[in-house]
Image 1 (cartoon, rainbow, N blue to C red):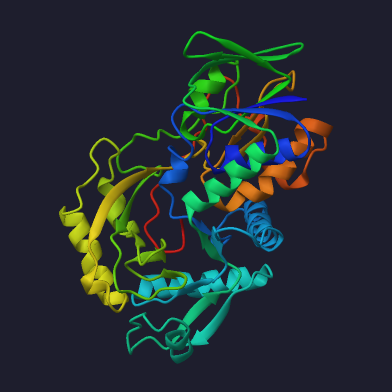
Image 2 (cartoon, rainbow, N blue to C red):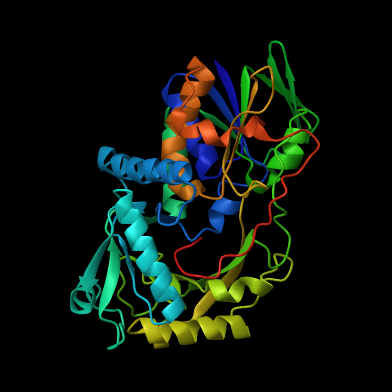
Length: 390
């Protein structure tokens, strides 16, 4: 079967790897370069920490488990997934209340979440500066983080080794489904044909699917200070020791390899504007460094190399969209703001649906054809302000 995948982020390359591994003739069409879209500006925290409703928690939990399984099944090569858990403590009353409720709810769902004494947390993460007033921290042992470039590299090389082809740069201007498959119109004027097209186009999903006569409305990825935008700061190598995701009342951080860190201050995102990313010496960067120095030993010696404005791939009702978008079952859409977590779980589920018509119960609440043509959901999506909620 000929499969065209549009988009070479973590979702698109996971799909390409899966379809090619099952013997399909796969071509991936990418408008820029692998990882140039949302995948390149992700905090990359693998979790099902605060995912609502229950069905979305279940889908993300399947993603967490799939990462662990993929990590075990592919022991060779650089490690892209680091299953070292997430350590969270609160120094503000509001955060403390949210964290207590979150741990209780997750444990009620059977999710791995536990309270550990502050001394144990300090021993677990010796570089962390956990204030004396903190008595305990929450630990989520099954969570972890991904190094996106390494992950993309593994997916890309595996897909190519299984026979997939990557057309890059190759912007897709239109997808035209018909009785025998679908045509893919490219920006250079050429046309390709496939038996099915799977779109993993991230924040470009809505206009691309509109060319196929399909309607999957997306939240505006360019709206400053909206639910789709947020800052991520990347440091230069620094003399810091950090093994896992840390979530605190004013700063989230994770390792990024080679002594580098990724920093996130959710309460600072109100001014995040993709059209005006701050410089490495902007007041925002200075504030993040001040917070880092309070959280991590050696953080006072860190320097910001770059601040990026992430743009989430967020369907307009706030939920993942995954399924056939057209009545003829030639165009399958995947759009989600949890792409890093979900990618290894979605790939086999999507392949089963496209190749064998096997409908997954995990995807029942997230069908791409749930939207009324010509209408947008009456849902207000607000920015996340508290830790553990992205």
